[in-house]
Image 1 (cartoon, rainbow, N blue to C red):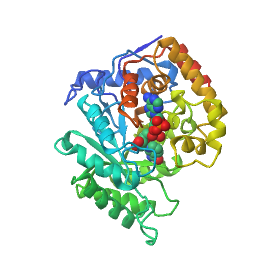
Image 2: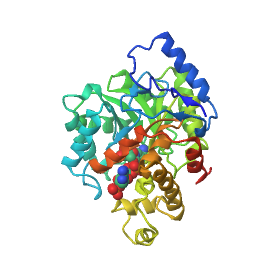
Image 3: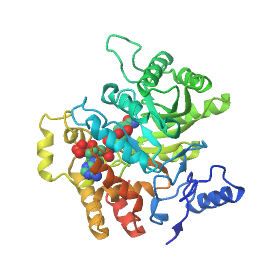
Image 4: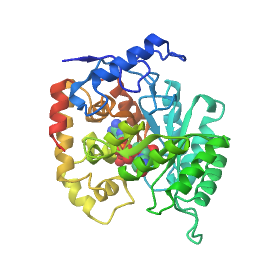
Length: 374
Ligand SMILES: NC(=O)c1ccc[n+]([C@@H]2O[C@H](COP(=O)([O-])OP(=O)(O)OC[C@H]3O[C@@H](n4cnc5c(N)ncnc54)[C@H](OP(=O)(O)O)[C@@H]3O)[C@@H](O)[C@H]2O)c1
């Protein structure tokens, strides 16, 4: 068994130096070599328990320090029928930030704009110490053919809207939410670079895009001297491991930090669903409820319940919750910079944050991974 003292991209497990000393840089390099910068499997590394939200990690090839767990805001607002009302969202935001969390994840489309509005309101007064990520390329109006898409015009309008809602004059991390399949990738990569040049955006990321296309975008940006992509957001959990085929190895090679969204498979990995829920979810409730969404995404299925049961078994051994086990598996993963929490209540958030204290043994990791070997 090897004990890991650092992680690729992790500045320090305890107090991050603002200016890393040559010794710290050498130690980080050694830790990276130990865990293997290519082709490492998760079960090779074990984290000593006791991470916290200030155990910062570097995001991809950037110098940006982020908390090892991000707070997602897709549950901020009731507009989609299954989120948190303003007061509860505020409690979650305060609990996360008061513990030192700095990495907030939103999108122009979440809860029809309410998520960004609430985030902007809550961040007032402490905005500069936060790393606010948002995404563009959602539809803002059905009658406008340029309202959605990856192109320059859609990007500019989306970013201006996000800046207003977030009550800020810069976005720390702007993701392309999903590549629209158009040939305009050089156009929008150039436009993203312009936003960085204008100071409206500090760092760039991508989501919803195949590995071959991200790799091409990054290579072209490097050749042209444009601001690189430093983050890849991808659904990744014990339930969704397809990213291991192409996306996570590509991210490592191309210098993008992996930000794992839907880390609990929409709630299935908490173990709260039973076989009876499969039948109920098949009825016409999607996507009006979280359970319906989980069913529609394939997470709430016989396979999903079987994987959740393995997480629950490990949780019983460790006297903890299945949610923490599933999140701890991601926290220890050498390819992952930060999972994005999707809590809907403060109680769920408190439970999820407990994953920072949990260490899985290599045997437990192996059992979790074998539950759905890829
Ligand atoms: N880039 C993208 O395309 C994309 C896609 C999805 C999400 N995201 C980002 O990732 C974040 C997280 O995604 P997600 O909401 O799908 O995450 P998730 O953690 O997989 O699912 C969140 C749901 O799990 C349940 N849950 C969470 N913690 C729990 C606990 N301790 N006990 C019991 N239930 C718990 C809640 O379900 P109930 O509501 O049923 O209680 C909650 O709504 C989002 O906020 C967003 O920022 C990005």
